[in-house]
Length: 309
Image 1: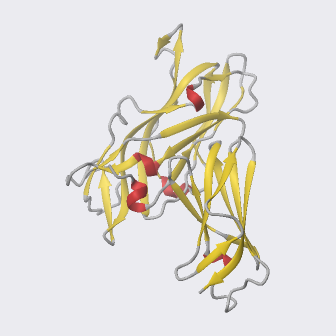
Image 2: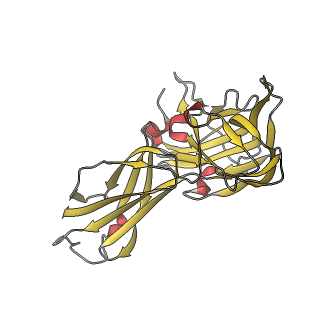
Image 3: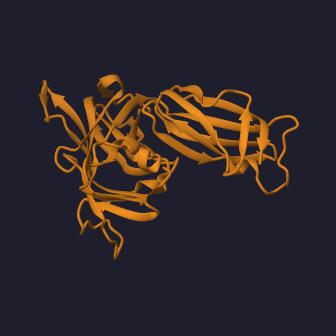
């Protein structure tokens, strides 16, 4: 089954930062934030999150230690949170203890993608409340188990997360990889299926990758103002092959940067894409490998050694 990345490039959705602060001897306060990054060809990715809870256990019995963080439905277009965060849960009181996973219950949604030069909508139902008024639904979006037991978010290396009242700040970064999580159902049914690939990591801070693009000596644009470094884009590729594209922002006439934020620790590749009709070379091989660590910025520097228009 082809992934959404194969059909419409990719969206790397990172959801979540959990902050815990001291709140008495046996509780802590938790704030849940969402973040994502845009994907080429994806126009909308709307979901209704009806419940979020931490799954724990008491005396080894599953379910007794569950803690609900969100019970009021929230509908959001994930693409509006590009490279940023927004509060989903604020200061929820959580008993101290050990939790095995985080779960998101999603009761509806739709994706809008470019296919054959047209925008097409695939929704969980034709009367899904999150649809824009008058929207035409072109096909089904199926979400197996999303509205019942919920989408499971396993923590880093399948380790449990322990929350204590002494925590000044605990951060759990949740990476919802949309590029790997959506795909067309086999055959010609016209249906799309969401089988989420979601990863979580318990850490103190999220990491980021700052990409720099610089003009090398003797390299320049033929006509000033026509094609600048800001017309180039940086591409971040995760270990699963999903791609996030971000335009460069000029810092000087000869230097531009792109900063990818809220990343899970791990290995990534970084590439550079030129505007249409422009070929180029750089001082280092592309894509370049880089590693992201908790709370650490990774820097990747490309110097343009030639430009051909």
